[in-house]
Every structure is written in C-alpha cells, then in structure tokens.
Amino acid sequence: MLSRVLSGALLGIDAYLVEVQVDLAGGLPEFTTVGLPEGAVRESKDRVRAALKNCGYIFPRQRITVNLAPADVKKSGAAFDLPMAVGLLAAQGVLGPERLSDYMLLGELSLDGRLCPINGALSLAMAARKENLKGIILPRANSREAAVVEGVEVLAAEHLPDVVEFLTGRESLPQASVDLDAVFNQSRVDGVNMNDVRGQEHVKRALEVAAAGGHNVIMIGPPGSGKSMLARRLPTILPPLTFPEALDTTRVYSAMGLLSLDQALVTQRPFRSPHHTISDAGLIGGGQVPRPGEVSLAHHGVLFLDELPEFKKNVLEVLRQPLEDGQVTISRAALSLTFPARFMLVAALNPCPCGHHGDPVKECTCTPAQIQKYRAHISGPLWDRIDMHLEVPAVKYKELGVETSGENSEAIRERVRQARHIQTERLRQAGLFTNAQMDNQHIRRFCQLDDSGRSLLTAAMERLGLSARAYTRILKLSRTIADLDTSDNIGPQHLSEAIGYRSLDRPRG
Image 1 (tube, rainbow, N blue to C red):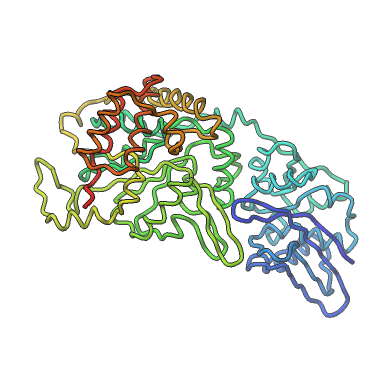
Image 2 (image 1 turned 60 degrees about the horizontal axis):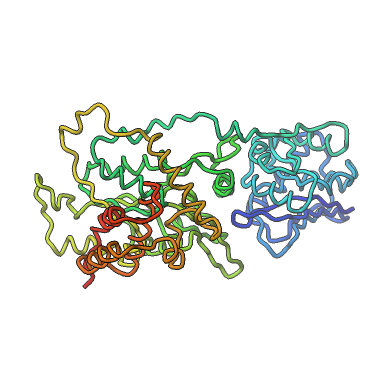
C-alpha cells in the first residue's frame, strides 16, 4: 500500500516542498530510503521504528521503501522523522489520507515519540504558504517562530500520538500565534551603552556617522585604546530592525539552528566577532552542502574583525564580494546558493606589530619594514572598500576618572534614525536604504557640490593621493554628514569632516 505525506526541506536558507512517499510491499523486512538522503535522514528509520513501537503502534514487518521527492536534491536533517512515521501509519490504514494533503509535517522524533526542535521553521512555514497549504504541523518549540508567517495555520505538537489523533479527526492541536508588537517592544537589557566609553569623543562622532549611513569602519590605535569597546557598542546606536529585516535575519539564524527555544524573531541587530583563526568557509559560508558563514549571520548588523592583520590574507580577500554586493554566492558542482550578507564591517588593528607606533609615551620597537609588511597584509582593494579610517589614540588618565562621558546610546540612536529616514525617502525609488549603498549614478544625482566644495575636494585628492574609490567614499560620507545636519546641500564643513575620515589612506607607490 502507498501513502503520501507532505513535508519540506532547506536549500541554503530557503525551503521547498518535499513529498514523502511510503510504500509497503511483500518480501523480507527491509527499510530503504531513497531520494538522496544524507546521514541523519538515513538514520531516521531507527528513530521511527523505536518511536512507533514505544507509542503503541505496530511497525510493519514488510519491505518498506520511502522516497523523498524531488529525488534529485540532497536531503539533510532529522525533520523527516515525523512524516515518515505518519506515512507508515497511513500505509497500514491507521489513518486516512483526507488531511495529509492539507498540512506540511515536520519534526525530529525521540525514541519515546516526543517531537524535538528542527532548523529552518520560519522558511518552511513560508514554503507552506507559498504552496497554498492549509497549515504546518511541527514541534511546539518551533511554533512561535513559524507563527510569524501569516496566512497559514501553525499547529504545535509535542508527541507523535497528538499528531495521529489530529489527523484522524479525534483530537485538535493548539494553533500557535505571536504578537509581533510585543515581540519588538519587549525590553532587553544589553548592559552596554556608548557613554560607558571614556573620552574618544571624535571616534564616537565618527561611529555615529557610520551608523547613520551604513558605512564600513576601520579603527587604528594602540592596545587598550578602546577599539573593541567602541565596536561592541555600535549596535546600540543603530536603528531598530524593521519587520522585513528581522525576517531576513531570522531565516539565517533559524537555518543554522541558532534561535533559542520559543524565540519568534531576531529583533536585535546582530553583532558577530569571529576569531582571527577562522577559515574562508567559516567567514563566507561553504561546505559540501553550503551553509551560511559569519558574514550572513551579521546580516543587517555588525561584523567586527579585531586584529585585522592577524586574519589569513585569503580570508580577508573573500570579503570583497559581500562588501560590494551585499550577498554571497557559493557554487558547487551540483548547485549554487546565494546567502544575504548586507552588514557593517568594523575592523580594528594596531598601528604596528608592537602596537606603539606614534605613541608619545611608549617607544615603538618595530622597523619601518616591519610596519610596512604589517599594513601590507590588508590589500589596497579591501582598504578602499572601507569607507572610514579612524585613529583611536590612547585614553588619557584624567579622562578615565570621569564618571560620565558624553551622550548615551539612546540620544545618538535618535539622530541616526532621523538621518536613516531621510536617506530612505531619498533613495526609495532606487530600492536602496542607506548612503553606503549608492552607486555612481546615485552619487552624481544626490551628492552634487558647489564650486567651493569641488575646489576643496580636488585639493584634498591631490594632496593625499587618494584613489578614485576613495573619492566616491568621501562623497557618500559627506552626504551622510549633511543628512545628520538635516541639510539638503553638502557644505564645505561636511566635506571637510568626510575628508578627515580618509586621512589614513596609505600612499600608493
């Protein structure tokens, strides 16, 4: 006898419909799974056998063939346990096919029949809605996440018998729902604030500009000057995530299994700080079945690379595409996947290997050749893709003793939010959100200079020997600074500040 149960699987962070076909035939008892199953899927037969037996159902002693269609795409994960178990019961006539075509079934089975959480519930619920299914049945721990998707019933189950009783029409399953306003408005104490940082007022101003325009930043300063402390507080001055941004970010974290139990959405901007020993696959994504990397986990948030020259050169070079395109495409022989990667890059490094080059108190022990080699680890094209270069000097002792230091994050965030609103309205027709995303066409349109501004920028380009890419970065920065001043025009004061943020451009030989 043949039965069909609807399920789903992930391909990257997107989901697609999978039909689990179960056939019972005569012959020696055997359980075969086809349809390109990976290891966890092949092991489902043992979990399903034990779960059915321990829940009081009969496991058929026949030749069992389970096909996962479409059969030409690799399937991974343990979410097929539940549809396989239900398919076996349907093939034995324990339950009818009436409701099986209306619902997508997902869930890992423990040996006693309990449903364990799965990855990618949000994307799978989106796939169920796209296929015009009535609903989705999945473990209770994933129900709030899936309930974010409107237009599809999300039914939460805790045990295999609960699902069987629902499909036979004898019992009902609770329908999950989530209050999005409550999710976004729930208080969260981060424990960090921009006014925790003593001194460094010019760096705080620069980070405000970076947050307002979505610009990438590199900070150069001696050890202990507060570079990491400042970077970790950057998310506190970024605007809150919008609902579409939260959906995009949550899909990545859900596919990676990084959502906490019963968490509906990622509502705080991500902050990722990978160690410098990370591989290029760990940073960008990859694997035999490609998975998102740190740049995708930082989507709509901040990617902080501390001690930038300590990262492998090939790892840094693969950052160039996501910095430019806002996404990562990973190609394999069988498939090609694209992951979102629109993030703010914040990098930090010492001025030299010993960290004391230019320090008026501590003497630098590095030779000019060592300093040049240290800086040369960062290629020119990558350097040019970073909008703002900031010097972070050591904090003076008298500034450390001050109880409070400058504005708090809430006040800065409000100015950033207003500047972002101005940019969104200006760039709406182009489908852009921040000044950092503008290309040459938008720069020519929205970053026009008067005669005095052109003269000032020409003189700065000649004196500092800046590249053409640095020229466009300065125009973007000046546009953001003008937006913070709620000014329609870019004035000389805006240009001067923007030029100051490119003062660390190294000479090109």
